[in-house]
Image (tube, rainbow, N blue to C red):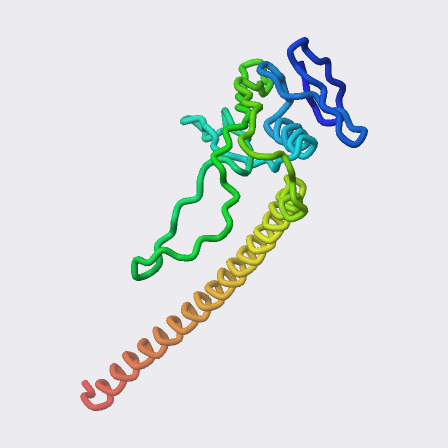
Length: 208
């Protein structure tokens, strides 16, 4: 069963439809299929915002052959715990308010040989109130996608600039090489002329 963004959902008997502000979204369930990893992220991010938490993109498993992502965990941003950070001289720094509460809520999606991405595990329960603050809401997937797009554009521009520098350096090296060849020929001509002059001088000083 597909779960593309904007598509229709057929709810299995054990799965709930969640309504929030007039929008209805299907609750994740094991066996739910997506066309791609991104489609799974979009779905779970929308589900998270409807329910009242912020999605965190977590660990993945890659192919040893070509590095492709084969499985991905998507969870709650309150997953795990913050670790104390010690200062330069061993004193513990004043801790900031932690957003980590060891929440286990998550979905695990896996690339299937059919070409679909399938939910193989769904943990629904959270160990904290499901309320998204305005500050947290700014860190939703849409904002992260925007940041990724901006960084990708910046990287692309830097690559273009680097390529321009490489072309300019290659042109400069070619000019240096041409001048070096010309200088080498001039030096060789001077050496040849000196040898001819020395030969002529010897003939003049020691006529036969």
